[in-house]
Image 1 (cartoon, rainbow, N blue to C red):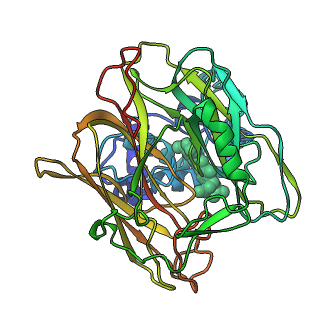
Image 2: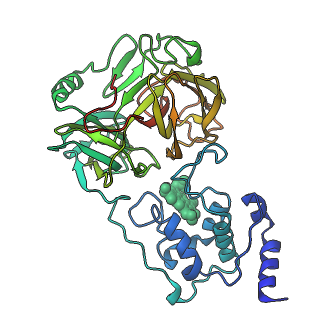
Image 3: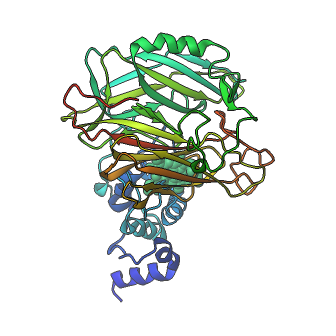
Length: 459
Ligand code: HEC
């Protein structure tokens, strides 16, 4: 038997599971697989973006010394497609930022592990990828909030901080990344654009102890909750608002250059599409702090912006669509909640994000077009709070005015859900992460060409 034939037989016999797990047959690599020649290239391309010192992953995979102790875990996680993380159903939609490995790369990593996880010839080692510390993009500008102390006692707090851009002309943002100052306490951070003349009013509203409190909401400290007497609507689609509290639509428009969510790195929009940050405007940092350490922790969260380098054709904004009235009973392991929203204008669909908290289990979004056609546009079959990716469409497409977006989510409020903070509690909408949310966000662009003056119809 030739060496190649032997290796093939060895892999097939030693690892029948691989071919089942990968779902189809793969061609095993022809010669000896080493870290330096083969595996490092795969890790550099697909893993070290997170697996490098001081980033979100628990260990670095930059060097042989770093990676070798994890050879088996690496093999197991890539064969099971747990790594790199990706939670959208591959059968529904094609996405630009889909990081899933090819079957050939998975076979290479498997073969490497099976043949002793060898280092190989140092001359084969590709150059180490260069990174700027912390960032996953190369920002043209970084805007940072003033230092804020999150006291050890803080369970959950939403802070609103307004940072002037000092832009003297309109800027077009292509890519952005929100970088937490201290990941131990920053649960999420949404950065939106706000006009300078609105800042004072917003700050005044926020400074009141009853900010956000109304007929349907009450406040404890710096977070809002739904009042228990608010109507219970699980099937938002059967309710006049589609899932919003009475008198409010389920969907609203927001201009969000960047967001930090668990497992969410930078957002890079396709060429020709960008967000407008008008001259003189401010960025509102909505930072959700949650300090589970007993110490006071200082934070300075930043946003890095990359400006469009080529002509912008279409301006980006976002519809955020919610059910805010659901009630998930205690111990219910499969609770269904829906929301419905009908697009008030033509949009070009760019990207999707699903947002729930620890009890979120799955989310499906269906578009019902004005011509009656139905299409499932996003499916997250196994939602995981720790991985809230934004899925950027490979092929942007027109969603006409009148398209109805039907979101169906399931929640697991039982003890089978290892992330569940408390199965004995019924939960409703609330800002703290141990309460729930049910949101679908559509990042879109205005189909009308940017001509320098026309902007989006910001209703
Ligand atoms: C988007 C960031 C990201 C990327 C890309 C990524 N990882 Fe991870 N990885 C993480 C984080 C965060 C964890 C820890 C949390 C978890 O296990 O869910 C992790 C955990 C792991 C673990 C388990 C460690 C343990 O101790 O259990 C392995 C093995 C691993 N990653 C390998 C890889 C490999 C191999 C790749 C590339 C093919 C990769 N990862 C790509 C972020 C990432």
